[in-house]
Image (cartoon, rainbow, N blue to C red):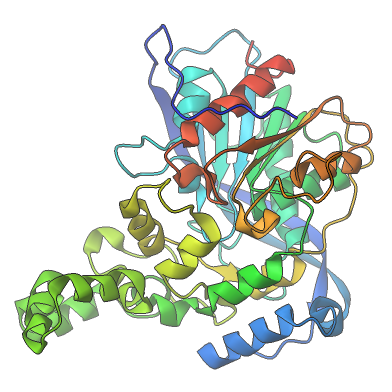
Length: 446
């Protein structure tokens, strides 16, 4: 296992070039064997809590308890992607990285519009290392088509969409990208890593290499994670982004109440008259679900996903976000507020299938790197080095057994980092670890 303390961005001798990117809507036809679950329609937040209680109970496997059988799910959907390539391409045989985000994010996880894009994975991969990238909004998320959050949006169906995109890249039929790629690498985060892993299980020749970030095969900590989220219906938690309330109607209501009603500073100053400090009020607005209520209040935050059905859920507030994704003192406090106000939902079907991945990818022969933050709470319980066995270097390293034919297997533990790797101060160090691994394995652009 490589364990290198990389805390700062690599300094390159040559000036980085600018990437060229285009947003594309790609029609796909999916076909997947999904589970059929006996879960009643959620009517409110109390039902979301009941679902979480059942899912996390130690009495048994709730996924199996609710499973009635299996059915083949088919359908035509649109997947929103962003394709990026270097301004000046290296050679004639470029490598494309297919980037799949996890729960709670959309494809901007890989190109964060925060602090002048200083946390951009795509900038490092494309501008500094010459890769092409295809970042995707998973089926049901971001600007991709919405779908049934229980019957359709499960791991198998979402993997089917990923497979279709991969085959388009391989054959040169991806719209607006008239190029066939001989070298395709799949890079995932969390649930997106699970989908990339499932792709390698079901279609072992579809990918030339796997990078699984925020990942291990230890599911012991999923239950406390789900419990910490205190899930709410997304449409009730952030109604301006995920409900059926329009910005126009909200601004009109505020106009009737007076201009100051839409000004959070004015609200804070007004409430301060009741012997509560402005700082305390701002803490309430920023760290509780009251802050989520205001997400989308500005016209620049107009929703991607209005009027979601009740099977779309989200964690309750910034505290839940921090617990699952961030390590205190090693991230910019403002990125937590950014991440909370711009979060995306997860679905009942995803939660029911996230822990049902096969134990092995027995036929995958490409190189595999698992890169997980040492303090990852979701897949390592807060310390990826706490294996309880001196012979096992880390919890992610145990996954080597899942890839018996892999050409290379590496488990890299990123220091001072929790589950949301891309949101930490030292994220670019992790990004460069990935690019160097791919280049060493002969998967760089050439």
